[in-house]
Length: 446
Image 1: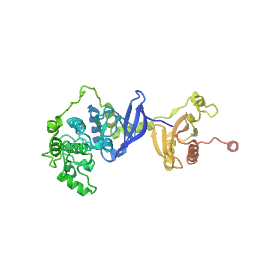
Image 2: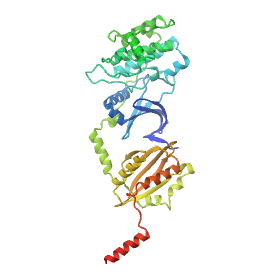
Image 3: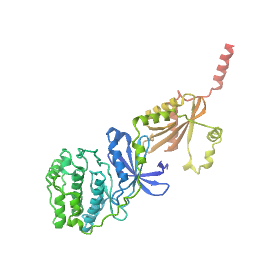
Image 4: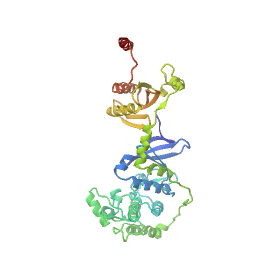
């Protein structure tokens, strides 16, 4: 099994998927720490004109250091992907706790709500609005404390812009002003979602829950809901103040903090404001202009392939492949094949890219190395190949092809098919008959 790595992180199973991102479990090979790796496709955020928003979101989330908010460690990037390294939270979703245990006790619901308000308030103070608060985005750590996650829909308005105009989030938790498309205050809208969450924690079901969206929106816009009989008077009063359909008169976070029911058994979190956090990695990923990116790609193309020395050639030679001395058993065996070309290295690279893509594979190029990925011929397993161009002599280039993942027989089929489509660029040493033809033609000239 080939282990995928990004920087110092080994990538494991997929643990979540969203509109623009996939989240995978990963491990820091230097420290052994488990992390969650959010992988964003560059082209998607460029296409949806979300680069600035994502950059601001990541910058602020890296600066947010709060015990009830998932921590963002660092940001990495490749030519096609952005990798956001997040703290891995082990206790699962608060949503799962409600599904399995039903409604929570008043004390437990209040504790989670206090932690939610603390985390949301801190983010608002930093200028970030979540806009998709729901139990699925609230995780529990190993100590059973709340951790707010997934700021994928958060909005960070430009200076001077106080109203947001994007309708997003899960309908059942969304504030009425968000549904009306008239613009809204992100902080006030988040408060509404917190109120719906409190209701769910205490009731075990949603205050607004209709299969028909028109009916659902109508009930949300009128705040048409009722509290169960077991709700204490204090909680009922607070929920009605939060689920006020008029954002202008809705209770604020500051007022929630001062509420008598909220205050009971409240424990203030310890915030480490003095932590030194820098944004060098975020800036490196996002501040590159298109010109810089183009020039960087140009410089990559202008770089020469690696030149093989005599020792390299001995190791690569079919007759004396020293690599086999270090392989242990079939599982470690590297299947490799190679060919030589007299065409310019750039021509060889572009030809291989075109052929691989015509065969239905995805290609990733960096300098004179190309990764080819896709499904095997029988469509049952993942298949991956690494191709690298080396300079043997000023007019001779060797392409080394190795199997990175997949079945050996599939690889050999690929190699045969691949090379048959590259006949124009593969150099063939002259045969005896062709040598004699050349010598005859020379003798005729003399």
